[in-house]
Picture (spheres, rainbow, N blue to C red):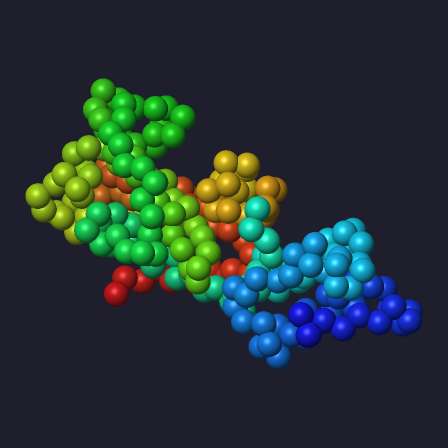
Amino acid sequence: MEYIKIDKNLQVPLHIQLANSIRLAIQNECLQTNSKLPTEEELEAKYNLSRPIIRQAYKQLIEDGLIYRVKAKGNFVLPKEERINLLKMLLPLTDRISLSELSENIVELEHSVQSYNPKTMSQLSSSKTSKFHVTKRLYYGERRSMFYIEIYHPEEYCPRHTETNTDLDTCKQITRNMFAIKLDSETCKILNVPEGSAGFKITSTTVNSENIVTEISTTYVQGYNVSIVLDYFKQ
């Protein structure tokens, strides 16, 4: 903690001194990406700082996009920038990322076959008596969760259960909408971010050449120091 300089004889508030010391250490790369910062107990013991002062300093650094907090684990240095070429990954997602393509950066939380649910499947064009495949995945950036996605499609259009990709190849249109939102409690837990965090919601609807909706998805992106590259072109 040698990088932290606290002088109680200065007129500069203590929380600003603490925040500035950490900020400078990050800028000078004395603190690397995902380095864990001192705990409140450690700072209190070494510098005789009160908990409210420490929390105020960390709160300011979080708001400045320099650090992030993981519940029950502590505060860590945030990567300078996480860039997600997100829309390129959603063309449609199940076409680009099948079960066999899962990697250490993707965690499949659920894959199930469910009956029609009007709350989540109202846009799908198939018969309400058919079965639907529901997939939920969590994607990681640089050692932290970046976005969470829920995908729905009728069983007859699910890539896992079709012998060919005919429907995917004849995809006619993908419509997306993106919103800046306050993430709900359940999504914050999945993304491992503080409750009430800001983020993005992206809805996607895939229609084939017969004007049948073959896939809908909803993506939630955590908003800490993230830029989204809007790339609509296939490669």
